[in-house]
Image (cartoon, rainbow, N blue to C red; front, side, top):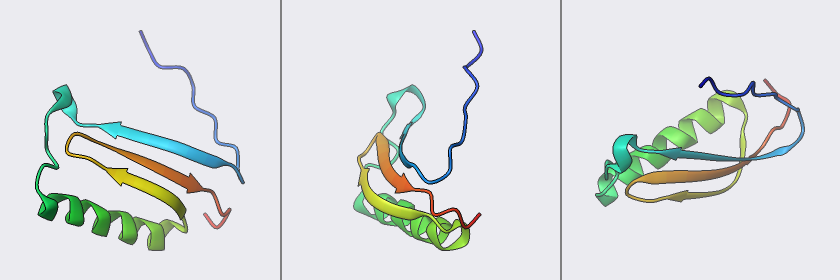
Amino acid sequence: MPRAHRYFLPGYNWHITHRCNKKEFLLKSAKDRRRWLHWLFEARKRYGLCVLNNVVTSSHIHLLVKDTGNL
């Protein structure tokens, strides 16, 4: 069954989650989690995201971001 259409509404806060495939533990070391946070920092600079909060666990991530409208 296909996913529902996603709509982008500028100026809102967004809760974004991502889970590793098959619930694997791909971010199990501190080094892996730091690398992921580095990528988040680079994406924040590139796309103008305002990251309000983030959680990085061994098998998934949570982001709370605000659209700044700079895209």
